[in-house]
Amino acid sequence: MERRNFLKSATLLTGLSVVPGVVTASMSDFQQMDKKKIKKGLGFGMIGEKLPLVDKFKLVKDAGFDGIEFNSPLEFSVAELIEAKEKTGIELPSTVNKDHWSKPLSHPDESVRLACINSVTKSLEETNALGGDTVLVVPGVVNENIPYEQAYNTALASIRMLIPAVERTGIKIGLENVWSNFILSPVEARRFVDDINHPLIGWYFDIGNILRYGWPEQWITTLNDRIVKLHVKEFSRDIMNTKGLRDGFNVELLEGDNNWPLVMKAVNDIGYKGGWITAEVGGGDRKHLKKISEQMDKILSYLPNS
Image 1 (spheres, rainbow, N blue to C red):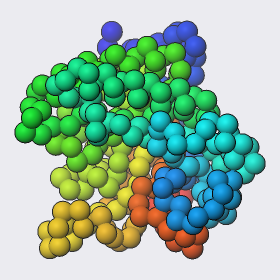
Image 2 (cartoon, rainbow, N blue to C red):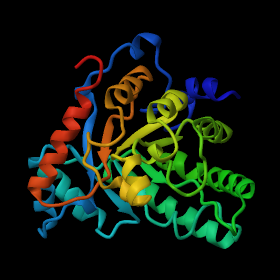
Image 3 (cartoon, rainbow, N blue to C red):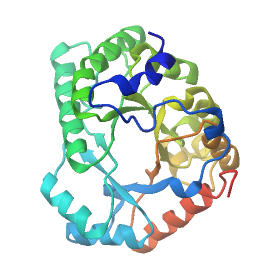
């Protein structure tokens, strides 16, 4: 079945009657989107003050954020996080699997791949328990020991092995573009998701990561409704070229090479339904987090209907 037709028939899947962020929308839905419907999140590791868990949640709320993204498998109990969530109103929409780098899904050793599959399965279960909807997963790594074509095929096979857990939990897998020497063009990224061909497996698009070798608005347009979540960070090619590759990230939001009006126009034009834009930048105290929140407000103001 073609992916587009599969998406339209997703509501027929048992237990998957609602598939937010992936199901195709009518053209009228694509004309404008309300920036208020896109909530702001941040990574838990960005909270730079040493406080009890509930107080950290309160700090995030006071800074103007709506949600927190945790690494998974979790270092806290689900019960602790649910309690903090209920006391503060902070949402837990997504998690980031923490084993996909050390045990990549593209690894030639089957036992390594299975370890990652088991870890991602745990992340899917935890995210479901937290009331979230997406787990971020790095699709694969290419290096001198993992050839590109082999990585492509083994990563595809590994992700397909996760489909039963995805369907059982109802949680999406969002594949993220990272500097792993793998999936280096938007056309390839689209093809990779379409080769998997499942309505709950899409792309967790990192806007800043692409600036090393592309333009995020082009990726967004090409990936279209395959994008299930958005990470926001900034990057400067000039700093990269003069000071070093990773130094390119050492720039404030709104002060790098992202053309935010174009990026947010692309987000609007595809009818983005992922509901969140989550910061993945350097953290700090409440004053610093408040500044990031305000920078994200400015980014959201570039949506065409602002």
